[in-house]
Image 1: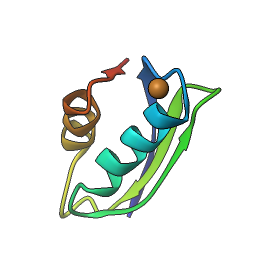
Image 2 (image 1 turned 180 degrees about the vertical axis):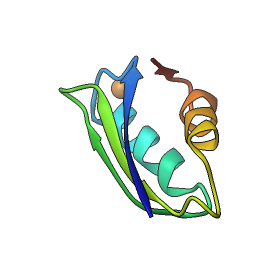
Image 3 (image 1 turned 30 degrees about the vertical axis):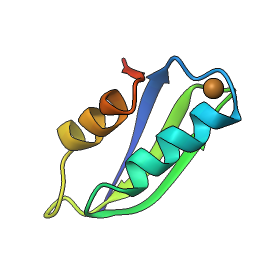
Length: 68
Ligand SMILES: [Cu+2]
């Protein structure tokens, strides 16, 4: 398992937070996703054999947010 912190841009409310949370949780291989709205970041624990940082990044971007 790997743990990464992703800086997420564009979150402004709880709905955004939920959307990012759901997007990350929906990626196969993600064991845990915690989104910090005020801090503008997400901490994700994932199985490196099942997904990658690029996939996590893509999931956040597909949900309509920016990854820095
Ligand atoms: Cu929002």
